Image (tube, rainbow, N blue to C red):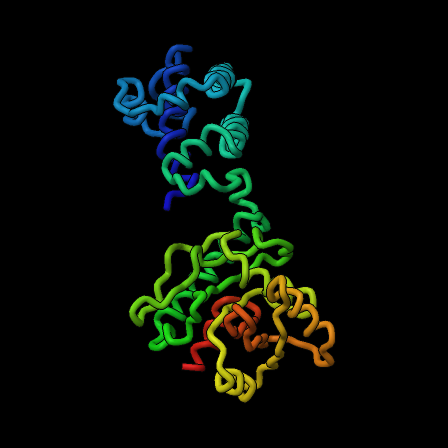
Amino acid sequence: MKFIEEVVVEEFLPTFRSMLAEDLRERGLTQSEVASALGISQSAVSKYAHGDVARNERIAADERVHDLVERVGAGLASGDMTRVQALVESEVLVRRLEAGDLLADLHEAAMPELAAVDHARIHDPDSAVRATERVRSSVRRGVRSLTNASGFSSLIPNVGANLVECLPEATTIDDVAAVPGRIFDVKGRATVPGDPEFGVSEYVASVLLAAREHAPARAAVNVRYEPGLVDDLRAAGHACVEFAPEDDGEIGGVHAALDGLDEELSGVFVLYQTGGYGIEPITYVLGPDAPTVAETVRTLL
């Protein structure tokens, strides 16, 4: 993990300072005056002057950096610009270059995973990047809880299991994070194909989205159906609602069952169907987040 601030400190700052020190020396300032103007030691100025500090070539070649060096150098040399103003001017450019620009590119080069996100909003506490990464993290924790539980593989249906969690304002399966390719029982072990992704679940995500139109839920997991499992969930205090799959799948049945429900669903609740022609019976455990529904499933083991 590399912070963009590290890129600023390790790449931008040495390059900018060495260019500015060089500019000031060319304007006739002594080594001591340059050190005072930049707030650094004379030995550091000497290193800049002798080329002992490596420059990032992309930063050094950027016209905006050259323009800033010239403006700040001229201002500091003439006394028209204070060190505070020089700092402000420099910070403005740094923020600009961080926002999907040169420094963002250098950051992505150091962390290729960032290429898939809106780099300009990484620092925004309400950004989509933060929301999606929190959901993915939640699914990871839930999956880890399930796969670390002895006996979980015995609850995986033939079609495979999946654990999903959606964004707060989810409307489509692209807003739902899940295990790609589902979780399968391979010789008694729950096998997880990959890291959680958005838009990779169709069936469990669709059931969750359908249920959300009638009851608050952010996460769901599917396990095999057995009357005893549903009885155990009901005995634990969870509302259990049966629905009938329709010819075009389970979603219509979920809507029909929840439309006619008298009780209000909250917390962890259960939807289940007992199968049909060519349809495997399945139990769905739904709740506020992936770790919670995973822990609920663990109580069945």
